[in-house]
Image (spheres, rainbow, N blue to C red):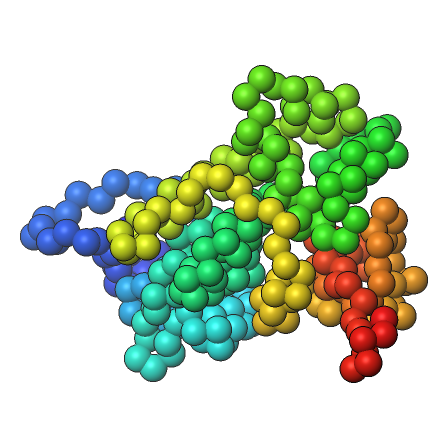
Length: 288
């Protein structure tokens, strides 16, 4: 990968290669807009080659505040080192997972802890690039939500995992027909299955042979208390107390206690998605 050195002013080219560099290089033009890459992707890429992204000049406009945030977070979770600049085993795993950085973080943590079942669960639910609110036709909203939340009334991540699992096992097309009949876009799950396969293949190339490849079978129904241990340390999942449930649209969900969710602000209103509601805790006398 070479910068377009000399077109506007003197500069330097950075060649990223795993093979010997010949004396003469005939660069092949590559159209890659850095503005479309997330700051997390860019920081991981540069750290892999020992480069400090914030010290490099680019023709594309980069938000250095976002770059600084990404560097600090990736250093905090142990994905990169700042001095000397470099990437860790965890960072290498994250760089190969084409998901939201938070899911890449949780998947790599689980893999490094040899917790393959939880890693496979996050691989499944993280494969979806959008929330369940975009999984169905608006004119089928009632039927679609009934169809989805029959799979799980407390964990939207688990709903995604169940969608992927049933789609992957749908040898005769009946599940796809059922989705369409209930207003679910089949493409919503098709794209997730492609993402799941791509992430799984990339990770299997990196993982030690002694650990064996990650199986294609989708894992569902994780223990919620154990799942919470990952969500607590995540970047995008926020914890909410039971009394806060009334401020959000949590239709079809059963919320008995604290819950975690990701959020996005739309028209000055916060919309929650990927909600995970935890079961009611017992007191020290065993009462609920």
